[in-house]
Length: 227
Image (cartoon, rainbow, N blue to C red; front, top):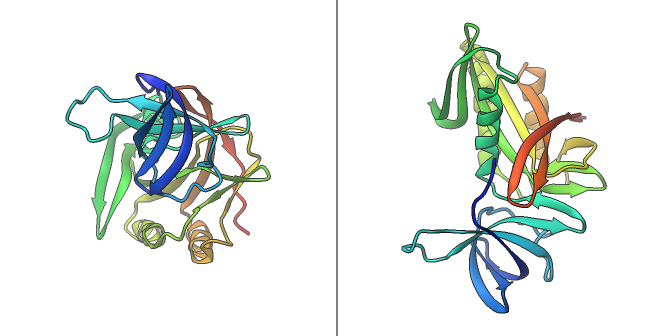
């Protein structure tokens, strides 16, 4: 998938989780950050970032911060993009052959899951998690405690009891990682719930991405280590 109107800038600071100050063409620009996670290892002063320029004159901020260089690795940090990547991947016939229905934002009980798919007589709920945290070649999630994430895992497990398939896709928005693990240091409860869900037959997959300036595509399946 591609972004439009990409501009290159230099990260200065992040006053709050919604905005960043970026140097662009010699001036300081207030930009919307499309990721409310901490991203402390990514958004460091002096980091080169890529911005998508909006053509909506009514917006308060003209730019969205969507990508950042971590050393020489380009990381996509748009937290909305992974849902569309998985949807595109399914519509290309991958993972869920002969899908007759692919629906985003499907309600189930007290949760709204990212995707719902019907294929080959089966019905599947899918939760998608975008991953931007990498440590020594290992991708980890989450980068901050997420009670909402724990709730979604538990609700996915309940889907199985009613005959649905349940999937969790961890979309690693970079290349170069060797495996995926829950972030035990930051939120051990998330890891434990993910273990329980996998033991109950919830499918847990991780995929890395090919990331280029202004572009991102799902690429390779990455080993998941839950123990």
